[in-house]
Image (cartoon, rainbow, N blue to C red):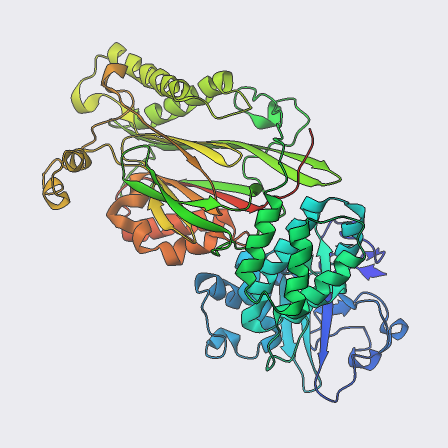
Length: 617
């Protein structure tokens, strides 16, 4: 029986949460690595109550007397103190912030066994392919790791036979090469030669049950990988392309010794297969409220989906080309993908704060996302539709707040009516949405007969997401940034202010921003009619894991994001990072370093993964 650590109710061993109180029963698989000459773990290594540790936190689920040293079933423990979190959390966070962290010298790594290092180092870019590590410690007799239990996941060997599709098989081979690259610095590639370590998640992504500890003094050649592939292909009834079959032979013979060449060959083979377009039908939004739309999907504002992708930053995956920016910012370096990509995950979070010097908050924001998952025997495809709006109001006491809220509401209502579900809106539709919002504020200014600084208005930055395409609309000095590992932080909008206007006319930046009116807005919603309004509109394609940051100038002033990218943004690209906490930390940073204005941010994290699996409607 499984005793709930919260209410002590006796549950069956198969329960994932307590039947009585609903407490999640967090369980972890025990990886036992005996010291040289020591025996495998035995019942005598547990306390009388079945705890595996001296702190009595991790208790064996099944009776140790039934397992013995020769038991084949994985040892599984329940965490009796789940509220305490992972004991490795601080070290994992440090590794996320500094991917090049040296565990041999870092104080947080003191006492953490070396066998834990690959899990911690690879979590940011390779989860869920690499399982989560919860705890690790050493005794004189053994090293113990507590990792995510994947004992019931579908083995690759079963999935390979069940899904008789050459394209899917090529994708799995490619994913194996990515894991080979990931494990190479740790010399743990031998894990990939053991078919018992290879499993599939619910999205048919190739994952590991755990990493085999190996003799790291000896390197492994690609010939061994070729031998393993030969076994996999020999048990398959699928006829892979001749170039793939030849590749396996070349690997075994040692003719191919570069993993990038292997990836190039697999990518070329994949391109021989057409990928039919999958169209997802989205329900309509009723009054902008996804919870009251009456549809059968589960639309969410801040989605928390499972699934992630590999780190695809290798020359075998893409090269680069220069494309002109939609707003004349000069060339954009964009990847030309060799492999087709698909959406793996979408998360968002937004927060706002009055700041340190204002008495009321004139910022307003809105987030809404719908996700639609199409699944079949050959895999799954995720489709997304998202709307993110941020406005920074102005115009005296309460007027700015009225303007920002009115703009958000008008834009929501307009796009609910005129944004069809199969593509992003055309530029004319987006412009008309902005003009409509502008007119709603302008009419109030006219009816109140206000003038000058008394006329209320608002800035705008808005992002619309459709799968891997986004549309960006902005007016004023609220900004959109994009962050990716390859390109770093990039400002995707140009402020509509006097200083930037002068730079666009050819004036040197130092001179342009030496003007006393340099930061005066040249564009805003509400003060003037639409004939004086020229919103910025741009379209972008997401081609790699990307974090979008919408923000008011309370956060962006003084190059705050540019100066704190590594500490406050880089780690948020990982699916393990909590976006709500990340937004709160950005608010705290702005209050500490700026604080002179209202502060608002919306974070949108878009994760991708390789897509070689054709789907049918």
